[in-house]
Amino acid sequence: MSTTLRSLSWPAVIAATFLYYLLAVPWFAPFAFGPLWREAVGAGGDGAAAYVVPLVGAVAGTLAMAVLPQRVGAKLGLLAALCFSLCAVATDAVAPNQARPVAFFIVVGGYHLVGLTLVSVVLARFRRTR
Image (cartoon, rainbow, N blue to C red):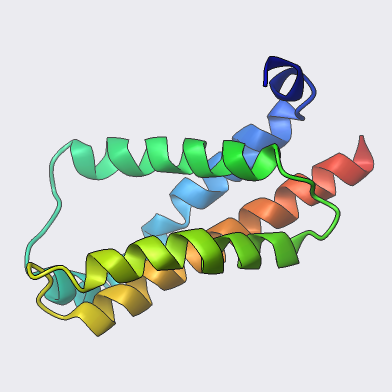
């Protein structure tokens, strides 16, 4: 694993991580999906964890995408989101504490679908230009 991590394009990993993380700003904003998300979860996430946990998740998701072959760009991001993120989000959506499970799945699942696709495109682009 350390050999794989040494061979990564770290500027691409950092750029893709922050792109994924910062996608949440417009995605969950009041003019976009923010009100639907708050209604779906039935509460707000306003503490420090609401910022730290998504950043850690963006780092983990980006690193996972970075160690996979990037020959397919956006296709890999879509596949990873469909196979991993959307399955986890669907499981969370049907938890009894979700006020509106379908809305939760659409908003949060859509965020990860778009986010991982962007990550994959950035990583593939940096890999081709190295």
